[in-house]
Length: 139
Image 1 (cartoon, rainbow, N blue to C red):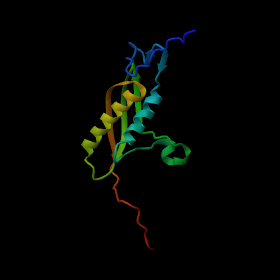
Image 2 (cartoon, rainbow, N blue to C red):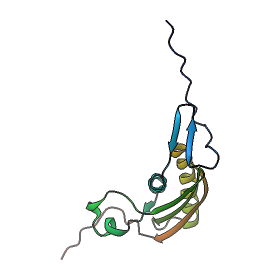
Image 3 (cartoon, rainbow, N blue to C red):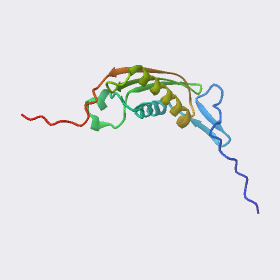
C-alpha cells in the first residue's frame, strides 16, 4: 500500500479575489481586523527606539491587559490599511523612524498574515527622552 501524496505548502499562495480569506489547496483562512491590528502593533514595537502607545483601560491600568492599543486596521479583500500611534525615543530622527516602521509593519503583515498592505499611517504621539538607566533621587 502506498502513502497518499501530500502537496507541499506554498508560503506565497495568493489571496483569493475579493475576500479577506487566504485560499490554499488545504482550506480557507480568514484574517480578522483585530489580528491585523495585533500584528501591526507588535511589528511597530520591534523597530529600535519605538514604543506603541497604550490607550483606554490598558493605559490607565496596564496590569489589566498586556495588549497594546496603538493600532487600528481596515481589512478589505485581502488588503489591509493600518493606522499606528507610536512613541519615538528622542533624539532619533522621527521621519526616518516612521519610515522604518511603515516598511517593517508592511513586511510583517505580509509574512505573518498573508495580507497585502495599501497604506500604513503613522502618528507620533510622544518623544520620550532616552535617559539611560534610572537615577535615584536623594531627598
